[in-house]
Image 1 (tube, rainbow, N blue to C red):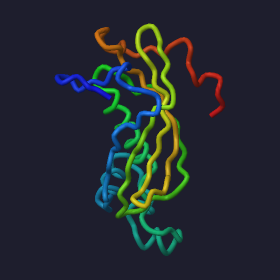
Image 2: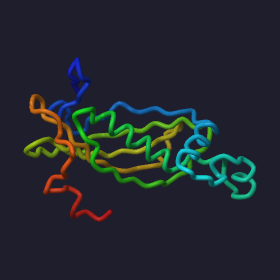
Image 3: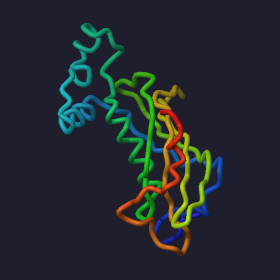
Length: 171
């Protein structure tokens, strides 16, 4: 993958099917991280900040990383990759395993398919979040719109293409 030296923008032509995006690393996540996120989201469930409650009452392995925080990590990764001229259009994922305080997480993504459209190109990505032991907790997919080199940014406000590659797929 090549990025222009000045802008750091990735263009549709720069990416091949099978390309793995650089990973986004987070953590180790602390109680402070979870408490600050809980406060911002007004999510006051004790499993995110009260260790005795989480372990003794709910029988959990520890304080749980908020699902919405993991969701935000995924969208941050997509937005950073799309750059200022691209667009993180859609993401879907499942929470399949718990992540607890003290864990290091990595968001990964790989280009599954390239779709050339008139105004920009779409990348269909497989993605997920793994912990430091390589356990996948949040598998999913995404669609990212990237500009063509020399043709300007993906239009803003973003207008979805008439041929949505996920329109006929069941979620």
